[in-house]
Length: 195
Image (cartoon, rainbow, N blue to C red):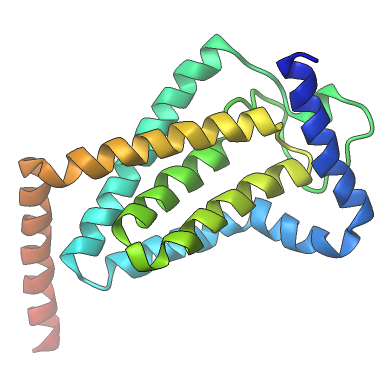
């Protein structure tokens, strides 16, 4: 069995569960389609705690996401495939999606780049972020819009980008100075508003 067949076989296994475990479908649809909005909400909340460490974490996560997306575009030029529902028969597609190159998964890159960044910074919440990233990845297979290979490569690119940014971004003086300038401006505006 070659890699392509293994990819399809694992996809079928998860997608078939969506026909058997119907009670899980609303959760999987929520994770696959709407969880990104809660991730954005989490980012906003962390930013407005006004803690420097949280803000550095958010900056790292955003840079890691952009880095993963750039790497994803390069990898997508080397290899590509359409979504399973466009290539296979009898796919249980639970959410709408346009047909395009689904390799690697943008959702996996987004969640793994940001959630792994959060995991590296927030030691006490590490498992929550890791589990969230994995659940979103599985949900995208479950609902029929990604192959496991799409998710796996997206997760690898996101994790790699997060790990690199975690080590490099907090040491960049330009980022420290820019954040300091932003925080001084924010403090100035808040002091004017509170008067």
